[in-house]
Image (cartoon, rainbow, N blue to C red; front, side, top):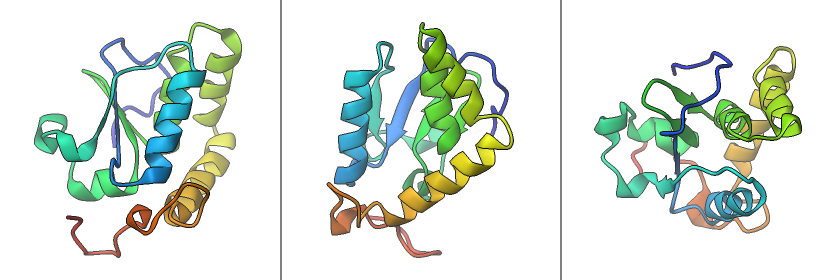
Length: 137
């Protein structure tokens, strides 16, 4: 994963998420409604992963914000979304999420949610992450 720096993500950002996951789709829609600045978003199933330098493993385990110069995965993707905002509070929260020790907690929280998204409100069996070594179809 590249792009762990705290520079503001460029305007050419794209949010890539798991379109088979109802939980993920719900949260992309909610964030799109809440955040004043929101990049285009697309399910990974609709794109050419090679174009973005991503693998199926990458996109089944993390949401991504990709820009022409960086890739942000998981909690850093949320950080990137928040750093795109005009308001100081949003940008401050985005920087905090990407700064230790808060980033350690954010990474743990993201991993917990990702691993349990099929059990969370709005989640379905299709939201379950594939077992290690399995391919997603």
